[in-house]
Structure formats: C-alpha cells, structure tokens
Length: 264
Image (cartoon, rainbow, N blue to C red; front, side):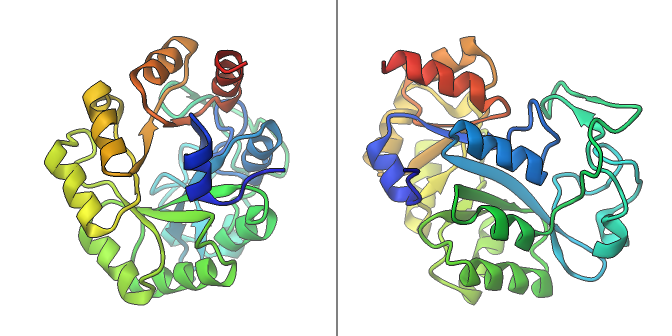
C-alpha cells in the first residue's frame, strides 16, 4: 500500500522519487495524464506548479504564458478558466530542458487542470510538492483553503521562492509545511541553518549544491532534500552514490528501475 505520510517516507526510504511536473519526460507536463502515469509507476511525490487565471482560479502551469505547452498564446492571467479549457496542453514533448514544441497536439483533449481537479483526483493517491508562482492575496487564500479542505498537512508541502512569500502563507495558516527556494544553487551551510531556523522541513537544492558534505549537513539538520534534477542513469547513479535522498526527475521510470536494482 502506498505511503501517504511525507515524514514517514523520508524515514523509511533510502531514496525518494519526485516526478517533476508529473511523468513529464514521456507525457504532457503538469496534466492529469502525467500525474496519473506517475502514480501508476510508483513515484513517491508529484511536483507541479500553480498560477492564477483572470477569474482568480488556481491552475496548474509552469510558464507565465501558454505559448510553449499549448495551442494558445499570452499570459495565463489573460484568460478565465473556461477560456483556458478550450485549449490543448500537449504541445510540448520531452523533458523541460531538452524537449521540443510540436506542430500538432500529441494527445486529444488534454486540458489545463485546475488545482482542485488535481486534488480531487490524486490527494488520496500520492504526496505532493506544490510550487507557487503566484502568491497574490486572493489567489493565495484560495490555495491555502483548498490545501486545508483536502487535508494535505501530512502529504503535501508548498514551495515558494522567497521568505516574504512564505510569511504570507504562514499568516494564513501556520501549519502548512513549506519549502523556500532562497539561495537555490548556492546553498551554503549558513543557508541550510537559516532554512531550518525558519521552520522548513523540505529543501530543493540544485545539482551544483549537492556533494557529500552537503548531504552530511542536511542529515545533521534533519532536513529532507529533494534535488532538482536528474534524468539519466549516469546522473542518477552519481547522485545516489553521493548520498542525496530525494531527486526530482522528468523520467521517474528510469530512476525507480535503478533504485530497485541497487537495493534488490
């Protein structure tokens, strides 16, 4: 049975697999399809991104515009949810960094999901790393209310870029666990202590942050580190050997297979 307690996952498992934007290396990123496939292959966590629509509905989209992943153009905030639902969001093939824009949709009827749709479908099936790109007041209130309604306190955390954004969340609900990306890419021992002191349990270092000393300090501070990112067998092996516990990946199938082989 799948473990839906984040803290217990990091106690029980030597390696924790986060499907970046869902199973995005092989399915349209940040869609219900990508999340479903990540659940099906046994990923521990799905990571996805939240932005706001014109009518202030939280939806799942990484980019500030629709241009890359859909057959529409312009900022997501220029459209209502109903208008967004008219577009197809399967126009990007491959991982976020080396994929390509397609000339035609890869799948039929791939819609942008509202945040609540994701929670309805998967909140009882997999843990969640929810990254917020829009923390404006009315939208943030909705996000926090949905977080509470679906009781994600043990199964999901919110990721934001700065401490001021994190403070806005804590003002609404001090019980929501947070990941703050401050100094991502330059996570010094002082940075780790600051994150710990602020109350962060989860951190998301870049690849260049991670070495054996970093992993040692993370363990000493009882932090749960999820590195962004690793997609190949070679890199997976390298970072597992270094000692990083959590890895975000566009290809969770590759990482899960390797972990199974290592600990067989």
